[in-house]
Length: 219
Image 1 (tube, one colour):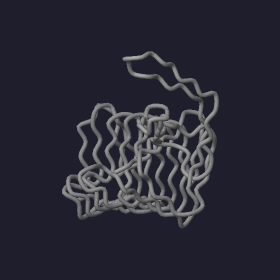
Image 2 (image 1 turned 180 degrees about the vertical axis):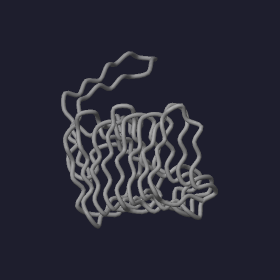
Image 3 (image 1 turned 30 degrees about the vertical axis):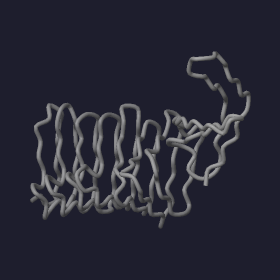
């Protein structure tokens, strides 16, 4: 679990108007990013609750299973490493937003979307992205994703690259409702020995970017 340390607390009092609570906080341990809540109780017993977002400020390694209650952001310049055998799930349709670097090896994202933003890099080996009903499994909206092996299944689209680039080799992409792989906007894709079968459509491209295919199957 995450630990919250609060310091430098200032309360500005102005009778008849909303009060302002200013504080600095440090989050350590567990999932050190997402949305956190702080509750303040005054001497009369009245309470108020406020929320604030926390981004990962250091490199983080997940060596055990994780359950996300809110979106997890990998900040620019930082790295999230997900070790072999780790399963990442969510209780609230959360996703991982990659603005820095994501490294995964033989991990599973079950119901958790991976979004690669403009400054992000995802390097995924032997990884499974599955069961994102109503949304894409791997969404690339900038930056780059390099996917080797693994499986992508049970999503709206297995992979949707609308900008940025996808490099994929030897991956099984199946059972995705709308498409296995879709390239739109300016997104580009380089696909080698990809088995994208059993989807609504195997490969869809309306992109102005380049899409190259070497071997593989698409349906």
